[in-house]
Image (tube, rainbow, N blue to C red; front, top):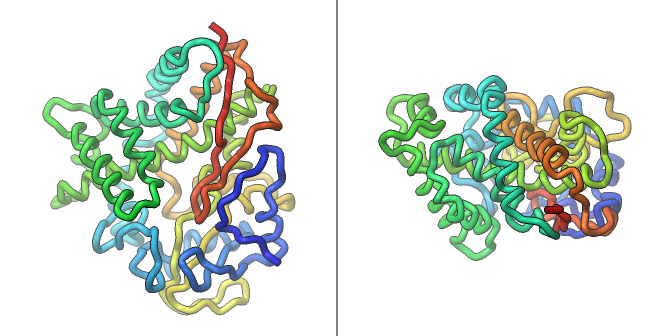
Length: 368
């Protein structure tokens, strides 16, 4: 019997994942029970995955979801965003974001991002610290607020709001989104010169203030979530003795343990055939990013950690630079840093649904 791919689990960092192999064995397109009820289909094979991620008949708009589904973003009509739009509307919005986060622009911030990592790690003091209790969230948020031109005295409010995004209490997520959007607006006040004002100037004429704030919320929350999840695994590998250069170390960590094990939900806009299976209109479809990345039969080449096609993650360059910065600073400024527990004792928690996996704790000794 196929294990539930959406069930929350906790296991040791070295314990094999039973879900990925089971999905692969079940075929390139696997029918499963969706978390919100009804059927869903998971893509497990790379060629099919790349086709799905570029197929205009499979869209992101939550308006296409089956009735009574929960936990989705607002529809594209209610809240246009990079993650709900497709086609020309998505292209136009992406055109406004992409120059801010290009490889050239992000690389120009390398010294600043390394400095932030150095300061935050130093402020933890000597002795044993849990890097998953504060640092893994505060570091990417500090970088994001700094880049966007949002005053850093709002950092604690941003940390609190991002944590409340996973609160199951009804209405909690909406309040957290509003909190992040409100603090993001501080980057739009007169005399601010960060990427928030640049995004405002890049957006199509007529973009509302509310929509601009939501775009900034999305940059902050998605940017924090991606790096937060990956940091623990990266540091654990590094301090367990992985001597790979920072670039390959980051890429391999993200390949094996991508921050998002699945894509966001997509929905068929019409009946169509995939892998010999006839899917109805409004069928929910996911790509198993982690399963595809770790398929033993997969040939070397670009992985799916940041997606593919029109929705390739616009923040991929920033996330990778942040991770390289932490690895570099630990090696150069804290050469005697070590894990406070054996590597095999570390545990990872999958939060359930299509959410990511992160270490439950990461106790590290940072010598004075």
